[in-house]
Length: 310
Image (cartoon, rainbow, N blue to C red):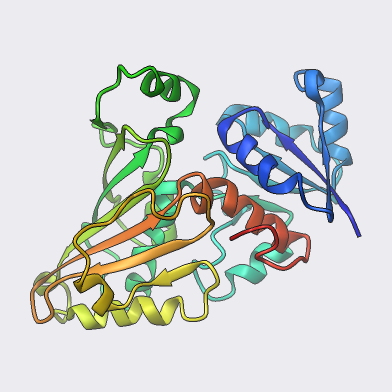
């Protein structure tokens, strides 16, 4: 059986990545508008005629596209931030919690997670659920991404060579990902998010430092690692690196998982010590965007979760 898929916004960075992952598959047929992609009537027809729609648009444009869909049978995946904290929409991080895969599979409206939130939620939610981090704890997250996550203007700036090697941003502490990070980890106060962009195209590190001695019960490095390992046991795409491997590492390459839908979680800390650094490695255009969208699409269509993904 073949399913028809319409990517609204296929010319953008995420849309192009999704199209590349889907166009070689024999089980899917892409609806391509070409020069008619700005034609409202053509878009409306595609939005209502597809089995599934993936929106790769700015927030307001995504809302407009959703409003154009009158066919209740159309499944929608939105890659913008428009619906990520909307309780009517299902959050599309399949590994986030027990039963989330089934929720996505049964949904007709799925919000694709952000790249930074994917790493942060992956690290923190299991620890909140286990009571290792209390819901009211003041959590800080530092992260660096390749410039491809910043859109066409940032990509052009960095590729022209005039942007420098590293740039901290989000300095107002009002980054649009904060509500998503806070809600889907179960935290009660906004996280302190310190993002940055580096002079490389794609790949991402998300880090959460913790003072173990200050946490309830003063958990050990082994307890923190064990909670993460238990949460992702048997996961196809999320791996918790063994402590022995992390202890032997001198550093992490943020480009190490580029081109994949995988995420690796590391727990760095001196066993018996009072501090830990939790680090997630992922491709901001893979598990952080297009890969996750394809994973969600597979689930919503009743296909194997890993079809077309590595």
